[in-house]
Length: 263
Length: 165
Image (cartoon, rainbow over all chains, first blue to last red; front, side, top):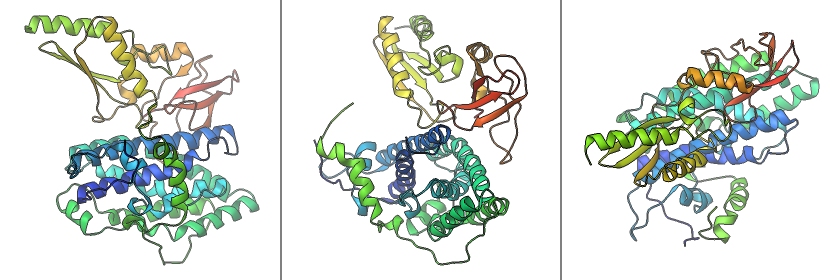
């Protein structure tokens, strides 16, 4: 049984699937940390349910990556589990936004809102992918993210337009998270190749619609869009914040210390 | 194996699967729910295809296990259970019998068209206890991925609403 860090042959298709899968897994894991800690039982269940949706989406995307990855030199093939449990920080390709520590309930909601307002129209557009398997994953995911967006939008408005204290906390959450949103719309050469084949859409094409959704909700929430245009990037190429290491240490502890353990 | 014996075997499979229910909503069979997508028999080999209601539905492994058990009990040995994502499951696949069973069980069946559209679309959901449509949503996400929590303002009973998807 293997406990060592795996190597991954990152062809453009594999890299793409891992990026989307890592976003979903890491954000899903962050939400799972809220289980038992949300302000009320209803919100506890909501956050756990959203996390469950994301981890389910991650599984489908990892399975796709495994299918598309050329087999390794020693004949082994990677699986959903080896991608999740046996890659180290530098091999993770998720957005920095997804790995940021939870903070208070307001920040958890704001992070989920900013992401959902992007990923919901993204998956909807991806339903037209020339790749039948990606289109199927998109079709499934989009139904789920539509609920995530509605749920988080309602909370952003409720808290932003709530008490002075909740308003200030939401504004602070927005200021904290804002510089991590730019990375969602980036593309690179690997993705450009897949775009040329019609397999994936250009994420930057989502930006204007995202901005409109965010502005609409923030207006109703009496919150102010930050002016700063500077954006922090690095997650897509494996340059992460220190927070991801702690997250992986917890998530990977069991499979690393008990190799081959099964349910 | 002839086409006739394959057809007979398929009937036996479908009959055996009548006993397989959703572990979280035990009044619904997987056929009622629309999770059971396809049963094919070719040369005595059975292929059962199921589709998840939600990507992360934790019941899928258990449902696959229950299918295997049901087929084995019926003396059917040569089978495969596989999962497909496309076409994506929708509440429209819930059979009319399934909707009635849900209602009798105390879960309000999904209202078509309430899934998306406007960000704050409103939907009229009738209370499964007293039938009143004076109801309100308590929580978007309920006891399972597929349900939301509602309350009847007439009889004051809280109830589960099967979310439209």
